[in-house]
Image 1: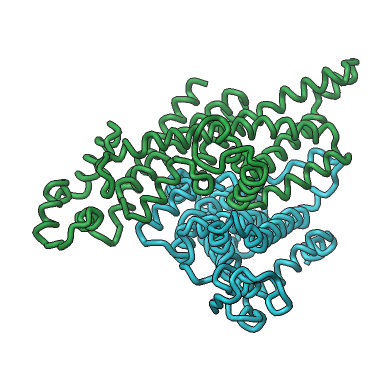
Image 2: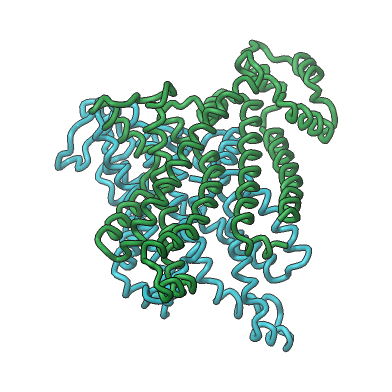
Length: 311
Length: 296
């Protein structure tokens, strides 16, 4: 197991480097020169060549590309992402808090997803082919096709406007989590509960079940055994869903005016605030890679077969 | 073709297929079918309720919603479809190269894929839109750039299963060219995996791209697109919620049709899955719906 963990971490390091390099290159490719972009964003009335030269000098944009990258990377490792072009703040002051807001939404959504996926998956597996199974499967299948933003708008209209139960937007207290979490989770529940259902059904025909039954175990006990083995899947789903949701909250944040990193990035795009965009891409990509690594390691810890496959 | 026959026997699959074909045709021939100009503004008809003249009513600028829906098929579905086909093609080429030749080529291609797949799709799209500016074309470019890696990986795995089979080894032994072996002996058997993966991606791609248009990063203002129409409808959501119905329902139905089609296609290509009693054969093809995991 130790070997697997070390290997998995060693694979992650070059990927992280490549990701950071690509992020750096991508933003450097922007058609506007950075110095010009900064001056534009600061609304300097007349942009002269001299002014551009001065800015280049100040920001070290005259240095060779690789040196610029290394400088930038070193700064990033110390959470120094430079200053926003538009707002008079450092990028981390903007991105940091909003990243944690997004993370909160993500973790709560993942918990809800796993809870309901397991619950519904188990119900459907135990009732396989019966009415409840069919109805649940149909409803959840339809939900996977519903756009999150549309669902979000409907939820707001119904719960916030018509019933006046929950806040329409923003992040103020526990209540404001409810609607964004529902909008985020429903689609994923529709996908993951299928996985859990089929894991349960696959387990039903395993040898240990037949053995248990033939040696006279009660059905209740057998179900518990099946459940325990199927729960492995659910833990790996939980780990997998965190990075995926983290990378995809932009739309939900926009609908519910959630002060997260997704809303911030859209704002940054519209005002061409490149350091913020760069920090957004880097932070989310790095978080994505690291969470994926953790989920792989946890999977391997739970399932020895994966460990041996990869070594 | 056995596959077509199998697909035809599946009622839901058949219905979905016909429906999708119909919607696509409506999109292609939108200029001949649409009853009105989708861009024609008429302030007298602001928020007009559905009438015989305007079947789905009019929007906040008095434009005909039905015509806008019909023209919206083009960016919302047809262009997404084109982007999907392009990225599947790139993915297939890379996947075949990696899976067939193995060795260093394989290692390089797979490392590139690893890096590409380390970026959530929304994040990379936002980066590309930040550089190139908002627009449907740029979003599609971002999708093609990212999605091929996903397809390449799956197709590579599929190819590797067949490369070591005896008939492929035999073909190689009697000196058939690589192109011949790939085209005649491997492509036909991997085609089913490619088709299933591609079709299962279509639904989520429609959702993602319409989501980006909803955020205002996609198609430019007066042009109709379903996500864009929802974004416009959101502005007046509290007073005129009915404007959200048509585009929203349309997206749900089309995505559902693609998901149904993909499920039926999977069964049609792999009839073993049909017998529910045979549990060992019930293992779902692992890529189905997993696509959504990449990003929603």
